[in-house]
Length: 259
Image (cartoon, helix red, strand yellow):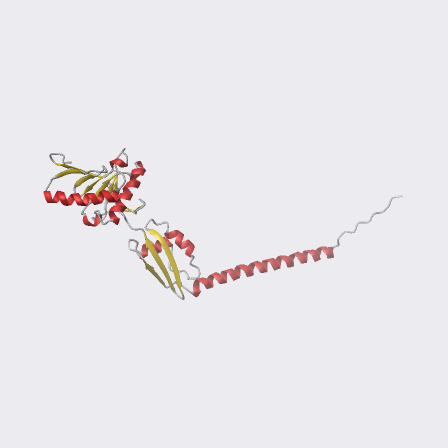
C-alpha cells in the first residue's frame, strides 16, 4: 500500500505578496539613497554659495606674486569659504621650494587670508654654466636668469659631486652672513674643490684668493679682517692668503712669501 505524501507549495497569492514586499523594500532603499545624495548635493551647493570667496589677502610673499600663489593653490574664483580645505592648500603651497611655512584664516563672510613664510636665499650657486638661488640648507629655490645679485655670496662648483664639502661650504657662508662679513665685501666666491676634501676649501674675496680650509670659520674670518687692514696699510700686492693653519697666517705677495 503506497502512502500519499502531500507537499504544500506556495500559491500564486503568496508569491505575489513576497514580490510586493521586495518591491516596497527596493522603493524604500531608492528613496533613502535619493534623499542622501540630494541632501549632500544641497549641502555642497549651499557651502559653495553661502560664503563665496570675494577677497584673498596674501602677506609675507616677496618672490612669489599673488597670481603665482593662486595658481599653485588651484583657486579659480568659484570657491566658498566653507569648502576651502586648509590641509589641501598647505600641501599644494609647500611643494614650492620658495615656501617654508604657511597659515590661513577665514574671515567670514567673504575674505580668505593667506600668510606666507618664504625661504630666504642664502647664496647663489653657479653650476655648469647656470646660476641658482639656494637657501641655507642648499636647496635650489629658482634659477637666476639675469645678472648675479651682488650682496649674495657665490658658490662655484657641483655640490652633487662633493656633498660633504658642500655642507662645509654652507656652514662657511652662514658664518660669513651671521658675522656681517658679506656686508662689507663687494664680491665673495666660495669654491667647491673638485676631487678634494674640505681642507682645500677656498674663496675669492674682492679678487684676492683666500685658502680657508676646514672648520673654525668665525676665527679665520676675524683674522682675515685684521690682516686685510694691515695689508692695505702696507700696500702689499697679494697673490693669496692662507688661513688653514692654527697658529699662523701665510700671506703670499706677488713676488715673495712673507711669514
